[in-house]
Amino acid sequence: MKFTSVVMRQWLVYVFVASMFVVSCNPAESSDTPGPQSVATTTEADEVIAVIGDSEVTLGDLFDQIGGQLGLMDFQYRSQRHQVIETAMKQFVRTKLLESEAQSRGITVDVLVAEVLGDKVSVSDDDVNFFYMQNQAQLGGRPFESLAPQIRAYLENEIRDSVLEEFAQGLVEDHDVNYVLSPFRVNIDTTDSPMFGNVEAPITLIEFSDFECPYCQSFIATLEQIKAEYPDEVKIIFKQFPLNDIHPNAQKAAEASLCAHEQGKFWEAHDLYFAEQDRLEVANLEEKAERLGLDTLAFSACLESGEYADVISADVSQGAAVGVNGTPAIFINGRPLRGGAVPFEMAAEMIDDELKRQKR
Image (cartoon, rainbow, N blue to C red):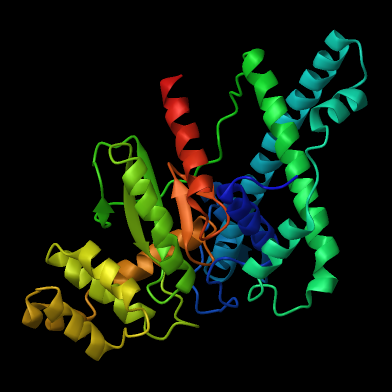
């Protein structure tokens, strides 16, 4: 079909590219990156796993070495397990509803699906070309001819799934289906973290971010739209996650932002640092402090002392403990929003779901 909505085109562009490329800053794993805390219990820590002569070696003796790895494995297992259950649950319900609908019409499910799809799953040459032109840089300069069949197949599958999902969602609403499985959530301490918005807002969006990450910069557009669309419903929390292996100025920029926060101007510094992302050396940060109207002597003393280095390290460790390995990493009421610098539509979908859940 010819796409009639620019939003739909942009959405499919994002989803396709996200499936092929990372839309977050993600460095190679480093032994210097703090890992999550171990989730082992005291009982497990006391478990004897080896004996050397008269000396016992317990599991706890190994925690300094492998505790972070075990904690991350535990998080990943719980997250993936929940995702498998949730996907299977929705597919099971969808299948049952399609079977019931087909039976009520006196036809098979295959015939029903064909009727629902009709002639909607059709992608024009213009659509394929538009998609390619919008993503040449991300596609690595590969020739159009080699990618056109893949792009067409992908767009057709996306349209097919979207049409069927919309139809199935209508059945879900008609049959008053209520998914009571709780979403997967993590606990993140936001004490003293910079916050924007209504402190009483029912939705908390937490972003782990890096001031030198270009994807974090691009995510600002999504954040601005969230602020505009949900002024009373969403508060935004900023957590530091400088990727020092690939961004040499990120650590000091993070510290500088907290020095600005100390003077009540974190978000002004936030916006300026991202706007001038290529100029975040210490000298530039000092100059920006003056432009922000900060007490420059206090700012310089704060930045030079490194007094917020431990706060930033704690944010990084906390992020790693909940699976963060790149930026931006987004959590909405503790629910991971996968995909990095996602478009507004993806964030809004989870926000709306959270608002609905609170009304039940």
